[in-house]
View 1 (tube, rainbow, N blue to C red):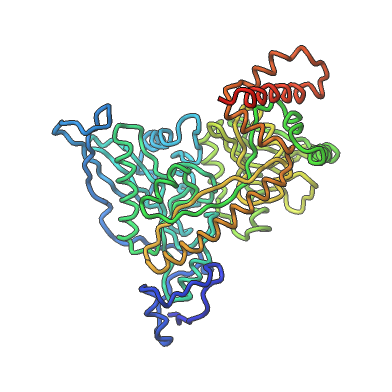
View 2: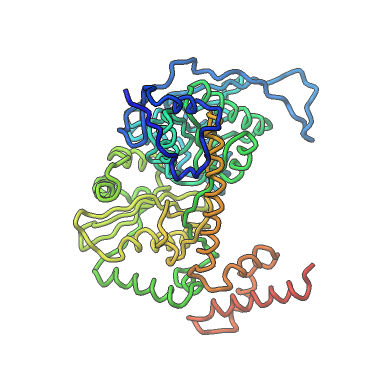
Length: 519
């Protein structure tokens, strides 16, 4: 038993008065002697929660046949869609899950974290399971031929760890007013702050209908479980907009990504940066060879079991020093690598014959995703973290012709190394009307502050003053800058300045077209 004490509202939620709300917590604070059963609070142990015992079926729905013009056909045949909950991703075939994932993102934006291989590795290794406070409750939609038309990765959670969208102050406010925040439902990829679709739907004529049905099923399950809330973290911006129409609160966050502007080499990327930043990066990279370190990028079959065993030591060293708890088990790395193949890129640093540090990356359709880093205990190599996690990732993205590098959550130090702020998204369905209103007010203020911070960071970024304008002009025009550069390649011979001169020439031609003939 725990006593609910009426203390001041959390400062994170602002100064809105709770007392005027017609909510469950209003009655609790009217009598300070009321005793409440607090099942879980955010600073407590990450113990397992048991899902409410209920029928795994969320209902059957009719799919309406649409004609080529989007009109309803006159056919009397209607396909049925059955929506249910499964307690393990193993209950869905990898081919069917991955077909939903691939159709949702598109081959060009393939997201490795949404694959059956990655998510099943989390469950099979004991990383995202009931015992760690992650109860799989994946939603599956099948048609009357038993084909899977849609899936949602979903978990019932007893804490807020491993999400990277922080709601601890919300849990604090619920607890302060005698209400229960946990368990809650979380739609995400565990321990992975990577943007991507969350409502994974096959590309059929019924796609929009299946999407709407699955979102309704999410809300229905939230009500059925009688949990406080449902959170969809790091969805695509398209989903973020659609979910607002479904009653979800919108929240934004910030990460730091590197953008590949068709660079042919790392040095060419440096030419876009201010002189002081360019000099600093070159000096940092020189320190790696000065320490007799050898950097290697290993992919797929090149990564052996011994590499994962040593990388797990690196990972535990990082978590022990920084977070205190390791989310992932040793088996996860072995299982994930065996299933993901060439989508895995492991950067290693060797001192002589000994591997002393490493950085784990996954390769997507147009993105290199930097995920984890670590080194040997008590090892100290200045600048090695920047080299392994940021500069090696940039070189790999250029080599693989990828559009960007996502280097994980947080880290303002990434800016001066070419990683600029970008917006991330999350959606939140709060059942309690009073808390919903207060949290909504908080999110409006938080968004305004975050947008201002991002604007200031962009204005003081490491790139030359005109780089953002150049990119806008190039994107808005039909001129192929690379083609213009190639046509003038013989004019200028200086190896060091050739590419920069050609780029300026191409932009000058583009500016002339825009100014003289804007339409």
